[in-house]
Image (tube, rainbow, N blue to C red):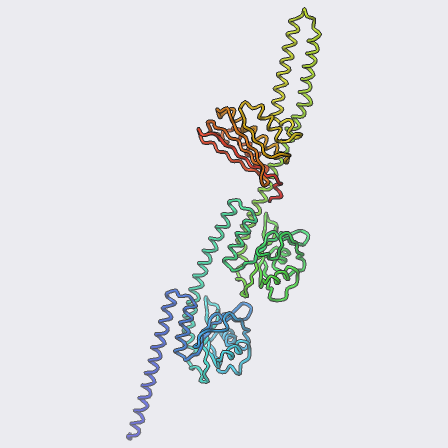
Amino acid sequence: MGYRDVMSTSAAAVDRRNEDSTELHRLVEEQAALRRVATLVAAGAPPAEVFEAVSAEVAALVAADGAALTRYEADGTITAVSGWTTEGGFSNLSTRYALEGSLSGVILETGRPARDDNYAQASGEAPRAAQEMGFRSSVGAPITVDGRLWGVLAAASKSEQLLPRDAEQRLAEFAELFATAIANSQAHERLALLADEQAALRRVATLVAEGATPHGVFDAVRHEVARMFNTPLSVRYNANANGTATVLATSHGYLGPIGRSWPVESDSSAIAQVCRTGLPARADYTRPAPGPIAAAARAVGAQCAVGVPVVVDGTLWGVMAVGSRENEPLPADFEGRLAKFTELLATAIANAEGRAELDASRARIVATADATRRQIERDLHDGAQQQLVALALAVRAAQATVPEELDQHRSELGRVVDGLTAALDDLREIALGIHPAGLSEDGLTPALKRLVARSPLRVNLDVRPDGRFPEPVEVTAYYVVSEALTNAAKYADTPVADVAVTADRGVLCMEVRDDGRGGADPAEGSGLLGLRDRVEAIGGTMRLTSPPGAGTSLRVELPLIDQAARR
């Protein structure tokens, strides 16, 4: 072998050693970069922080001028969710692009890394956006999360020199780490969201258990759903048999006003779909959607909406609908998650209807009992009392005709008259206990004055309101005062009681107080338990304070408006 051959062989060996050294150095750098990113992922860093680190590492390894993270959407588009450039900033965040002509479209079709060496020859929204940012070429690697193609990690160059041939493989290694970060983050977010959702459901369930009104429960559901999903638009509809839906409650005037009815026959809104099918539905208002409800939703800026049926006792009662002004579609499982809250709302509605039916039944029982009492009082007054009066007068007349020499007979007849008079007085007292005479004709104030006049106690009566009140209110108020004074006379061991009656803001209030021995307890059968039932039957409230040795105070408030209208 000649000198030149020896030198040539030595030079080739040196070149190989240099290449091997360069490759080794590159591998060392790449492994160090991967370790740094892996450490971040293991520490539970959020995807945004991981992407920032990946972008810097990839740029150093493959001489990239920028990086982008895109996510595949259910409607066949991609969204730029994060980006990085050497100049700083990324102008296309949250922008959606069609897959046609894009690197992400190629990766979606093949499931493998890909490259685009010349954006000038590519067509489509995404390549044009890259050209506008000054990029000439790019490489990308798929990001697979939980076995599903989630998105693409891409590196781009502004240089005429192509990115290294092994850039795809190197990028794929970082994409795997990034996929792990996304999976970890999603698992953490799902766990946190589940805990938050369960806490929200418990708060609403507590309201239902406490007997909150349907409107109060709707407000709680609306608040919780808006907080968790950034969906501020909510509305509650009643589904009518005539093919319309009526607004019962709304937020921010969404599809209001309250009481308005909308036709649902040919409407494409989520609300109308639920009314027609009884099944959950969603609507996309960014696309043409016929119907007045859909038009009204678009007018207030709704981009999409989900409606869930409210089923009470197995029947479609109405619809709970939630709308969003965000470009992002509502989560795919949103219907099921909203249904959990809607079930609680349905329970509140069923409870309210049950309470309303119970209250109405109790009110009918009380009204029937009062009518029966009034009829008995009239029968006693017009029958037995009049007969006793007539008998007493007849005996008096007979007594007047008895000769003077028959003094014994005259005295006997006098005792009969006295007995008839006593029986008549007793019968009047019984009649007053059954139904107060004159209450229907004269009103509450005169009836209370007569009641106080007959009481064995010295009663300080203060009646402020004048005029008449609804008959159930007057009768209940009378019996409240009557029962309280009777109990005070029997048990309080006090000579004085105070009675105050006031009317303010649609409520009639009675307060009966004494300074006696106290210790009154409705459970001991003092008549207060039945009195509470009567008060609550017309929507009133009763509060008794009677500590032993410190007197008794009874406060009753009765609404002066129809309870059905209040609900």
